[in-house]
Length: 320
Image 1 (tube, helix red, strand yellow):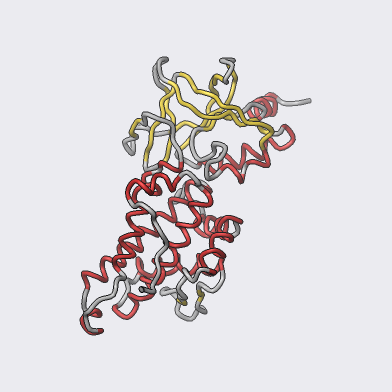
Image 2 (tube, helix red, strand yellow):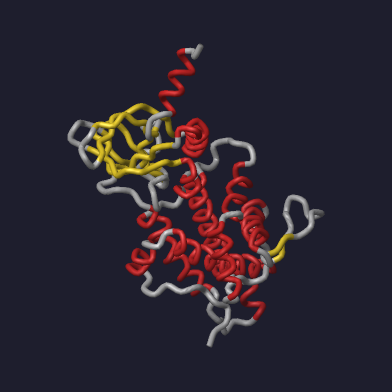
């Protein structure tokens, strides 16, 4: 005999879910859940409003005049429970799943689930006047292209002597700051693609890093950048345990681990003058990789880059 709890769980998992962020079809996280989805449908969510908090979209209940545009994802019945487990883990502790009534293109009322933001009094969520998309994400669409250009300018040839460059901490600080911001953009991509970071889950960073490194888009982006000589060679050890063997940017998986270890070393110990070139080479390689990766993953993002940095190109160490 089926218990009431089992029946409620079955009913909860047997309805579509309304999505409005990176889980929408064609957005950055959808492909990892696509295997669980039977069909998708354009829809709206009446009596809710779309917000952004800490660069992540969320919905909150609103008056009846407002609505949120998105999609309904209909899970396959045989894997619906697994889908809801994975999507709940993806959304993390800052969201809660609730029942809602969505409207499809035919204006039919559809019983569905949606993840709404919790503790909305914290973090000062800001209302969004239009639908969210990865291509319009502030860090990826606007900060990133300007950062790539600043990294390019920071490595321009200098007439200063070696000793002068070694003591030019204004230049060093700029290069280290650029790389740490680039590392934050990498973490933001992980959050959009694989779920919220820093929720206290053991091993979450390694899990996100492995997920990206094992993705076909990342492998293709690395292969493209490496074949064009856009990945400077970097080899580095862990500053917390120098007895561990070094890792390097020779291969795709090792490259991502290397860049993130340089990030960790920079934060935990700082970089000496002799290490600035490691940070510089890491910034060039990671910036070039992310430029190619984002164009593959988010085709519409180039149009946004053009607004601030027309004809944005990868960074090269070699000057004509």
